Length: 491
Image 1 (cartoon, rainbow, N blue to C red):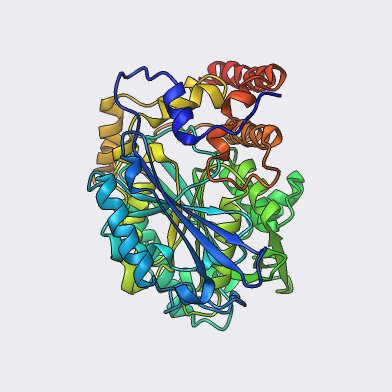
Image 2 (image 1 turned 120 degrees about the horizontal axis):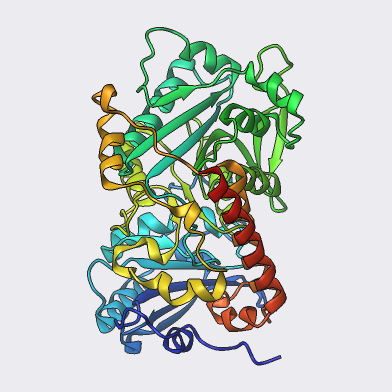
């Protein structure tokens, strides 16, 4: 096999640019946890790609206690606590390196956590680095191609299962905050929110004093019986419920608000065995694989995670979100969804669901895994790599409405008579696209010489090798062609 140990800059230079513009500039801070010495150490590697000067490249090798982190870090340490501080040599070195690179002020710093890195993903890197460097900080996923979807419509679900120890009023306030900030932040022509609460919260939401925007619909647990009759067979009845309630409609995103647990061996969500009040409320674990399968079946390309009000599950929920982001393509956000950071939550939604590349937020709390193509400063990144990694575009899935229809959809919120429901792809079509994206990522991992797929540039470095697997590429293309032909018939 041809050597795959190329560099990110070599790859970017090797791919022709159809827009005849400069290579997209990337600033990457690679963090690697080394366990081969007497004491665990963390290696920081600041690298610039594209037209950014390589003169600013810097490397630091520090003991964990030098950045304020215990060698026995555990999820018991809250995500946004005082844990994590930059020593003077790292703080000044990062600033000096960036000064030599001379990047544009709007370029984010991409944090690349190199696996395996234990619980380092729960640390508040974004808050510390964005404050020190005065620029947004985003996390770099393995799969750098933005998921394909209809950018006119945002169809989101909120799985809301806080513990009974949380006062119902506090739980409802958090739900109202998420709904309000999502609707206020979404720049799409049409946004709809489906709320799936546990039995106690459903009862609280039924109170006439609780007012929600008409674009947010609270689903009834009676739909669970329908899902059971259809034999959908998800690991969790919650996903069965969501799938049945949507009646073939796909989702773009699912926001999880529930309990979580993190150990050295696993990260799981803890969900009520059933959201139905008539059944015994026993907790069951939804593992990362279960979450990924459920999201793919619903066609969702984004997942958001927030702990219930309070601090108890914050670090564990951050660990679940970080682990999921490393397991599948798509975008993943973690945010506490608390009143003191509501504006940051809105800005996260605004950026995440922008139909066009946008300016990312500076996150004081939480983190966001997304693709460089989503950032305004990296517009054009998609054109360099997507055609090599994925089969050809599926226009039936990403087809946008006319300008007039988009205006009518927006106006319908205020003037119902002018309203128009924009068409969203069916769940089976979106699920097929998510499968193609996941299969493409799996193929990149299979051909990688890095068996853990841990190198920061592994995704891009393996693109040429992946493209040589004609059988895989043809199979994925055939899947898309079949999906496209069925979508055309249903129009």
